[in-house]
Image (cartoon, rainbow, N blue to C red; front, side):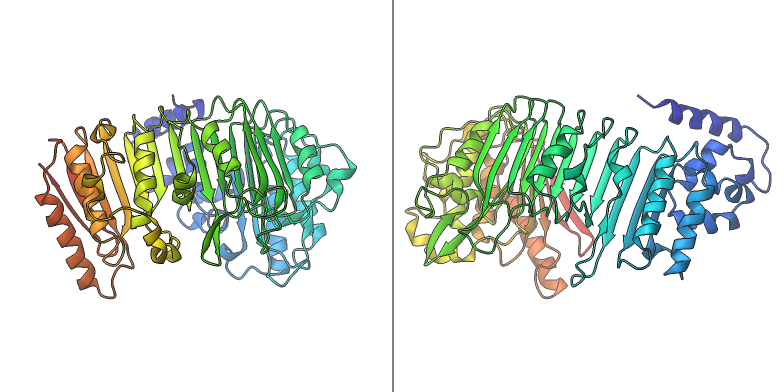
Length: 510
């Protein structure tokens, strides 16, 4: 359903379109349409360049609903000129129209200095209708200075969305209560002084929070998310240590309204607990592993003696908590964890979409078969071959007692053709001449033979495949013609081979 604002814009356009044509149609446009057009331009262009197109554009430049201050997009505007430019716009901007303000700036502590930033944020929040605020800074890797957020920001009952990057709290959160009662979306990236107590106070101060993103906030040791309102949670690279025996402590997620869960990057927790995720629809998990003295080790969980355990309690807890999701994404070395979890007793009976990091090496085939068997209602399968997998596993293949070649035809205990009964689309991303080889072709042949309702099989050739375009083109053509020769059980199946580097697409139906 279109919003009331969109309907008003359409009506204004229709009235303008019926007017007699003149030499300057832009000047005849209604205000709402001009402001809508200007909102798609970078703030500097909208303020200083749009006036060359139409005088009406210049007259409405201070009525923009969104301001994005990006220093790289402002020509010849550095140092004090940049500060004066931002300050003038915020002072004279229309109070009634501004809804969103973004500061994407390089911070060095001098220009802009902390006083400038405090003033800009205060001017922004003084507009009672501003709902979205982004404070995203870039710093030199050798610069340890950071901007400390002002106290008045933590007592705001108007904002609904807040994004913070490379800023500091400087214990302000510990000393005061947080009042973000209207906040629904909160993203925090590279907040180095954010600790467990601060995070807990922030969550208490956001009673209706629906989206929470934590990226590279490595001061956190305990992520305890208990929320009735939270609908989407993203945790990326928050607990990390170069020492594999030194890890984070606890991750606990209990959110009955949560619909999307993403845990990725280097998150090394001693204990992961997922509770009360009855509303979960989409789940993504990155599995991290490492090698030591020729042996595979799980990076989740230690035993009582502090040694690495082969028990996968955290992995089991994750799989057991997401069996009802409709969309499942497994990244990293998920295949090693799936094969090592015995007995495998998980069924994702509601899963319609499955995305996997996989290179279709011999040692990955059993885990792929297990996941296909565990998703009986699967309709969409995406396999990403662009992520490098553990090359050391290739030399350890002797430990797997099966033949990689003809795997999909030779072992009925792994393969049941009925498991593909609902599969409609298959997409393989990152295929290249030196990756996968015969095993990739055999898997695609198996799909074409048994997926009775298949609508599309797409193979996206890696842009970097091969040293020369000619080699990649030959690989693309050979794959395409080979697939055409395979029998297809679905009369609707379309085979598509795509090469973005060559801007070329080959497709064929039965």
